[in-house]
Length: 461
Ligand code: ATP
Ligand code: MN
Image (tube, rainbow, N blue to C red; front, side, top):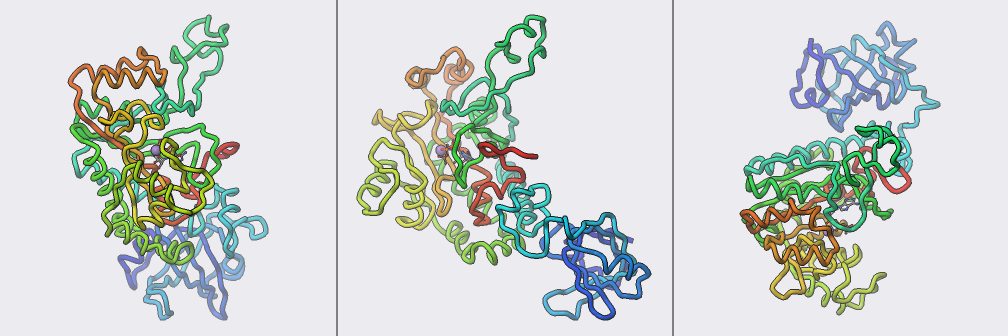
């Protein structure tokens, strides 16, 4: 006899066969001769309906005592269901409990819980429909990311988590330190300034600089890993630890970079629609009635492309109130980004060519000497989802930007070598994976699309 995942029961429908399932009880309802049990095993959103006849030998001392959260194993015959709204049901002839969940202490009951409450029980929340659906969509899109790049011949590079170079130069890096005495000699035990790596080290804010190394050898590469930012922003779109997808492409300019970003985003949305429809439907039912419409708009539209200068003039002309005033030279805030893509264009918008002062040193200086070849992709409901640029490939220009940013050139000699030896025009971008998940599910808070969120003041589990 076969142990089936419930998802496979629904797709393969092994009618009139004896099957075995294992999972957790969602609900129990008793009628005269039967109990109806809704069982979920995490393989899909839908529960399997189990019919437990009162003739079963453990009916009165086990089955009628089952509650939400109990784990069990059921053996029985799969039948077509006469009931409306479901195709199959399992007529149990044997049921065993792995573990009980006391109804007075188990925090997840049949009713709907707020996402805020669920965050406080992050060790149990994946058992809910919504958090389970998010976990499946997240896994599926992660696979989609790899599929997209692998199909196009990109090489996946594992860039380091611990680093001694600061990519964004914004001083938002977590320090990495070893316990005293863990160094290689006795002096380390005595020196409070001993550095395990020989100099101060941090958790990476981006794998870009190292990805550039591999792009300038292998052509097209990508990295997909955790990144860390010690920024004190308690917003619904910032985490201290998040996952970023970063392709880096040799022989590629800013326009081609945007074309890749646009097709990447569309691919992932299409991927979710094709592989996660049942889970997406949950969000369409309970979170955002217009979810599919929203995703369709992105798939069908060709994204707008405007310069930063054009964006500023649009923002200056509107009589809309903004908390943060804008003028040429200021960075765009989420409220400006959302106004542009939600109200002005009503579709995704690339904003390009930002002032060099508000962007990092590695972005390529434009001929106007004022702006750099940067691009941010803005999405309705999210704001910035992708940030990218054409990289400065000219040695002298790069050195001069680095000096202005007060970077120690010696620390970056390896990065400068890429411009000294066989430099090529190249570009890349970073997509925030959690923001993608927020967009695809319409979940409002980024803390609910990652299993264990890390935010200022909070890193339990
Ligand atoms: P923002 O202005 O929204 O804070 P950023 O400009 O600092 O973002 P980048 O350095 O361009 O972000 O990073 C690339 C992408 O990574 C962003 O477009 C966004 O999708 C994502 N991202 C950046 N910071 C965070 C964060 N703290 N939490 C989650 N995702 C983030
Ligand atoms: Mn950015």
